[in-house]
Amino acid sequence: MYPRLVIDLKKVTHNTRTLVQRAGDRGIGVYGVTKVHCGHPGITAAMVAGGIAGIADSRMENLEALKDFGLPRILLRLPMVSEAARVVANADISLNSELVTVQALGREAAAKGRTHGVILMIDLGDLREGIEPDKVHETVPEILKTDGIEFVGIGVNLTCYGGVIPDKTNLGELAAIAGDIEATYGITLQVVSGGNSSSLYLLEEGLPKGINNLRLGEAIVLGRETKEGEAIAGTYQDAFILEAQIIELKEKDSYPRGTIGMDAFGNHPTYVDKGRMKRAIVAIGRQDVVPESLIPCDPGIEIIGASSDHMILDVTGSQETCRVGDVLSFRLAYGALLALSTSPYVEKTTLDEQR
Ligand SMILES: *Cc1c(COP(=O)(O)O)cnc(C)c1O
Image 1: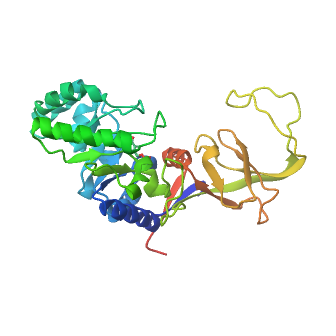
Image 2: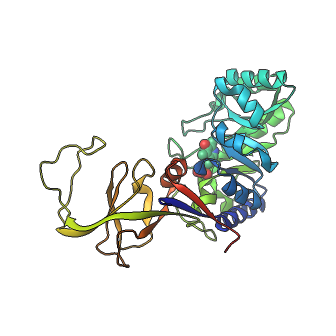
Image 3: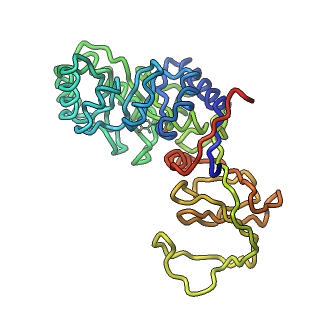
C-alpha cells in the first residue's frame, strides 16, 4: 500500500547508540524524543535498544502507548492543568514553568500516593517556555514545598522559537543556575538538561560542567544536528524513506494556461515558463506531508508543487524511465517526517530482522 513510510529500525538503533555513546563518554545522559514519529512503538524499541535513558514526548497519547519499556517517561510540553491526572498516571517527569500547574500535579500525585518529578524550565532567550533566570529563587522554594512533587532538576530549550543557538554563554548560565540552586537549598539536581539536537555540536568542545542531560529527537531519527542542519558523522540520514506511487505521467506545459488567480491554499502562485516538461503526479499531498521538506532520492527529479492530495514532479531529468504505477522514493527533513507520521493515510512499514 502506498504512500508508505519505510523505516529501517537497525539504522535508528545505530544512530541512537552512536549518539548515546558519544554523550555518555562526556557524562551526558540522553532522553530519546519520540514525538516526531508519534510514539511509534517499534521505533521507540529501536531507540531503547540504542541505550536511551528515558522516553520523552510532548503528547500524553504517545507516552501512554509507551508504558512497557521500563524507562522513565518524560512529558516535554508543559502540562495543561486539565490533564494533570493523566500526566501523573502516565509520565514520571514533566517539564514545567508554571507553579499553578506544578501544584495541580502535586495534588493529583498526593491523592494517588505517588510522587511526580518536575524539571523546571529556564528561558535563556529563545522565548518559548521557561521562567526567566531572576525568578529562580521565588519559584524553587515553592516547588520544594509542594506535596507529591519531586524537584528533579532544571532544563532549557533553545533553537525552537527564537532560533537562539546554544553556546557556552547561555548553557554556562544554566550550569551556574544549577550550582546556585544546589548551594542555596542544599539539594542535588538529578537532571540539568542542556537542550535538544541543536546542543549536540557542543559535545565536541565540551558542554559547560554541570550539564548532564540532552533531549534528542531529530539527531537520532534523521542523523542531523539542528544548529546548522549538518549531517552527523557516523550516523544515517536515511533511516526513513517515503515511497509514493505515480498516478499520472504526461508531457505538459510548465506554464499554466488561462488567467491565474489563487491556488488551493489561497496563495497567488507565480510560474517560470520552462517550455514543455515531463510531469508526474504522485498520490500524496499536503494533507500527508510538507513537500518543501522532501528530497527526491533521484537527483534528476524536482518537486514543483502540491495540493491536498496530489504532488507534482518534474521528472524530465530523471535517471530511470518513469511509468504510471512506478514508486518514487524521497528522503525526509523534520517537517515531512512529522506530518507523514501523523497522517493516517500513510502506511508505516518497518524493516528489521529480515534483512
Ligand atoms: C521536541 C523537543 C525536543 C527534541 O528536539 P529535537 O530537535 O528533535 O532534538 C527536546 N525538548 C523539547 C522541550 C522539545 O519540545
